[in-house]
Image 1 (cartoon, rainbow, N blue to C red):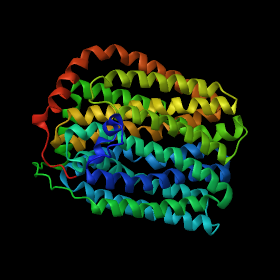
Image 2: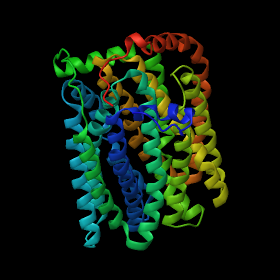
Image 3: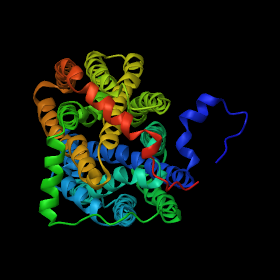
Image 4: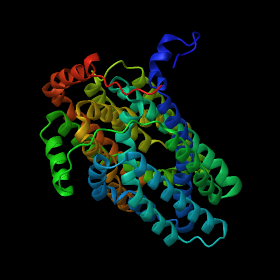
Amino acid sequence: MKYPASLPLHLQHVFRAFASRNYRLYFSGLGISLIGSWMQNIAMSWLIYRLTRQPFLLGLTAFLTQAPALFLNPLAGVLADRISKRRIIAITQSLAALQAIALAALTFSALIKPWHIIALSLFLGFVMPFDVTARQSFVIDIVGRKDYLGNAIALNSVMFNFARLVGPALAGILITSAGEGACFLANALSYAAALAALWALNIRKAPPSPHHHFLRQLAQGIHYAWHSRPTRALLLLTAFISLIGLPYQTLTPIVAREILAGNARTLGFLNSGVGLGALLGALSLASRPSPKGLPLIVALASALFGASLALFALSHLLPLSLALTPFIGAGILLLLASTNTLLQTITDDHHRGRVVSLFTTAMMGLVPYGCLIVGALAHIITAPATLLICGLLCLSAAIIFTPCLPSFHAELDTITTSLTHPDNLPANQHT
């Protein structure tokens, strides 16, 4: 693909993964689906709180959506290393569409009850670990070039956070004008774009890898990750931030309604502010020529997230709260996307699915348990106090992690330099 001559060179560098036809298709289809998913996330949290007014049920709903990930993500990684990732994604996206249709039907018919939302959240919780792990490890197959991998992961983050910017705002407007059911229906329809793009991809079949017993492959993946010092450090930091910090979103409906005296639109704009910051952070990562220097970004991003969350907890003014949300989003994005890029760059192809599954376990699997903790703690000491504690703990984790940088920074630089050498680039690029 040749870019227009009028496009500045630095923008050509930022969007270089779009040289792959496969990636252009994947980006557009999944982007539409993600907007629908964010609309549903906001609608579900608002609906359960509107029906019950119970902070604990907010935490329980979020918990059930993600709780199975802790146990299923490692299994999903083995599966992704054994069978077609495209087939896995097609099945999971279809099942998620059915879940959205069920929510829409129940809501439009006025039959929706809290237990419906809880049960359907649990159903989605069993589907998403296989979807997320397959999609994350599918990136290298889509772009076909390892030197495009970091850029493609960053652009995936751009796509995700553009959806996070647009989806909640659309949800807030749609909920106030047409109700939560309209958001569920929009999400169900959005999966058609993702499935169409998925089957239009031209993916070269990967050479077969040796298949051992399922549990033996799982153990090999864990051993591989634990005995790589950089991988182990990055996974542990991600796990801590995911348990303590990322569940903050469970309490944002309470902040929007009780602290800032707002409504569903306020909640949508708070989430969109997070998405804006994450989008800007993703664009900055996409402009980087190589993964070198990303370990320091991981540490700084953790500190930025923790400090911003603590200040957000202390704010009682809507303009100040809105101003802080982009810094929260940038911190989360820079931490998770940088970690993802580093892990996928230093991991060999035969272990990629399993290492990615450990990352998604650390990123997603612990969040629901954190949601239960913060939901229960907010019931006892209020939502702002809970958010303040979470922010300060994340800031402390960043401070503790920082002295570890010199011990593995040189090792990462050596590995990434080797992997991005032209002699190591695969030839299977589809443009």
